[in-house]
Amino acid sequence: MRPILNWLSQVGAVTKFGLLSIPQRGGSVGAAIFGIGGVVAVLVGVLSMGTGFRKTLDASGSPDAAIVLRGGADSEMFSGLTLESTRIIADAPGIARAAGSACASPELFVIIGLPKRATGTEANVPMRGVLQGALKVRDKLNILQGRMFEWGKNEVIVGAGALSQFEGLEVGGRLRVGRDLWPIVGMFSTGGGTSDSEIWTDASVLQAAYHRGTTYQSVLLRLLTPGSFPDLKEWLGADPRLNIKVLRQDDYYAQQSKAVTKVIKTLGYLVAALMAVGAVFGALNTMYSSVAARTREIATLRALGFGGGAVVVSVMIESLAVALTGGLLGGVIAYFVFNGLETSTMSWPSFNMVTFAYTVTPDLLVQGTVWAVLIGLIGGLFPAIRGARLPIAAALREL
Image (cartoon, rainbow, N blue to C red; front, side, top):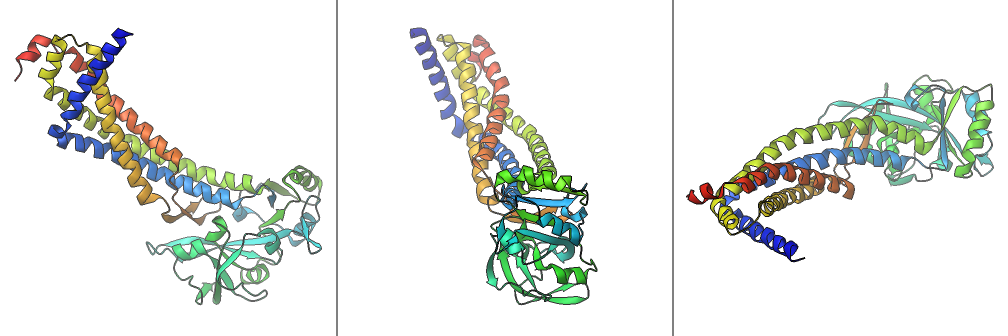
């Protein structure tokens, strides 16, 4: 027990010398802290974009809802269903009913071009045509400003996310759709899902404007219970009149988010790795400077019987302290700069813009801290070994 306590006291003594000498090396230590902080801030910031995007799509799905697309279609953009097919789908077992009719919502999905507020560049904004059945299925709809559009009229309501990101969507204004100007009569929210990025109108009016006849892109269904889905899928799949794909709504949006979040993660790790290389060199420079500034002290302690292992551990502790300070700084910067920041990006499966907010989570902050620790370990290892291997006699002769 005594040897262990003796060794720990040696580590404490050498570490104390290192930490007390930090003010003398303020420039190099500060550079290392800000370098590591920059790596963590960029990593957490980029990854929070993917987390926010995935969170928005997750909020769009529900385990007690299902979406029906044309067979082989991966998104609403490439789907198409006839009026007859939508009626057959609405008669399937396992669908909830309200006011004597099935909770089924045949919907039309088109893309219009609008300029982004931030850049002025044109982007694809989704416009959704719905019928009155949509109000039974999309029970999170909440009109925040103005009123609901009137059925049979070319009026629209806009999502809160779309209004914040794109020009020309103010309530009371007019939206050009094709050759016509459509009054914007309200703003709505569905609780932070992808619908907040959309513009809604009466499906029958939108069909006429785009010459779509009586076709739709999808049918959204409210299930009796989440457990009703297998029977519903089996019943619809067995009907020879239908060529469709049936998915749980939350599974559908999970698939929609995969490609974008994968690219964002890859980009985030790549940029952070490149920056981490520079941060490692900064940490190496800082710790080599620390060892060089304490050459005589380390040699004196070695001559008094301090072991090389105590020197290695003390230098590593100092390096980790610097790295953790940088990691905490980067995490704080990332949280206050990125968390809640609203933006929009392309959802590739449907080629439309989705509005979402960056989300900095505890998991991302932990990831950033782990990166900081790794940088500190790598940056402190070689200087620590050098400090432990310093020839005692030569070191004592240094000024």
